[in-house]
Image (cartoon, rainbow, N blue to C red; front, top):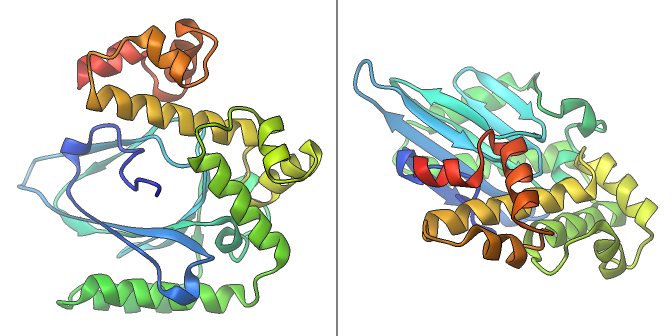
Length: 256
């Protein structure tokens, strides 16, 4: 099972956070829904630092609906006042319902013309059963947007699941063998459905694992951690960590 909070760099700063499964009809379109809610005192700012999963997200808030593309660096958002968001981590089949060029959204986002959806979600967030209600609403909307799911969509879903969860897969070549396809086919599929190369997806999983291991055990030996995660040595882990997170593993550990 993928941990929905795994990419959150400082979980103790998180506001109230809910992870929910999609409606059954949308199970091939959405990995999970993530719904934060916050109510902060006047003048208080809560900074949320995230190294996101290699995927696209549909995000709905009172301001509108947005399709958020895959990221190449850790990102942050400063929360103030009172608010909420309804996010859906899209599986490749779900992303294909909303864009055929995910690479164009790398480190970017676009507004979606979905005012009726935003109004319905906003209204439902005032209900006592708001969480189950908005999951059903957004799931139903995505199913309508997608229509039928092809064999290629399902194959792309299998690709993402493998790259995001299997710690034994450390190279794109290994992933291609496991998926019974050529390396070139795997690369084209990742570009078409995710907008990132397979190796970038593997590296993101390893960095999320490294950060989680440091949170769970701040005294971890970095050389041993690098070896366990498949890095050539401590220096390679540090370089990769710094490039994406903006700090070395030792600096992250100090901030914890």
